[in-house]
Length: 289
Image (cartoon, rainbow, N blue to C red; front, side):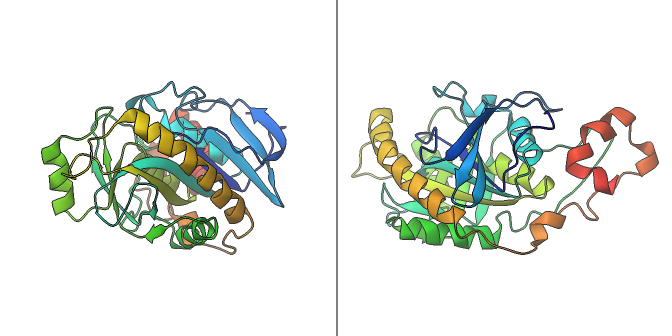
């Protein structure tokens, strides 16, 4: 990152269907290097009203990267480099509840991890940290995006559990029924790692989950079909863009516990931390090291 990189307040990670924010003004494309490798793509930094926004297409332009191929650490570190303090993850999900109809929007407040091939911490290599994660979503930002989505015309379900699966295959029918027995609301493949890393980076985090299908549990509905999902995603992407524009004008103000998540979380004796690890963590945890 260079000293001339533009700064932003709100970060938006766009998932399937949301590959840009067309209404951004004064746009710059910024390619960043991070201590954790390359992000998915260039960051698109611009302005909506008085709010500076950094947008990143999660899977890269052209949707090139599988969920398991995403460099989550680089993506979140890049947001931190750009000065982001509040991060919104937008993505497609399958509905696990009858009342969450395809086309509806969910703002989850919990996650269940069903992944097995993901790097989801900035720590390790000589330093150990354990952040609190009982409430993985910033309540203030979640309320704000729910209100913004509702104002944009969406049917919004506030709260509920997001099951994060490895993919790229969709669920088996047995798995889908299992997740329903857990009272989960939606299923996706990406947002949990982003939530974990945002917490370690002391960013406020929320998810705007766009329901596209009923997974495969619903007996009277067709199984997940990519073509049908893509068609619905285009409509949902326009709605998500309107919601982001509204959110930009109504971001929560003031301090938040999310921004102090690492206080007391690092257990390692500071004298035992290797110099290279300390340097790699300078932006994330430098003030605690």
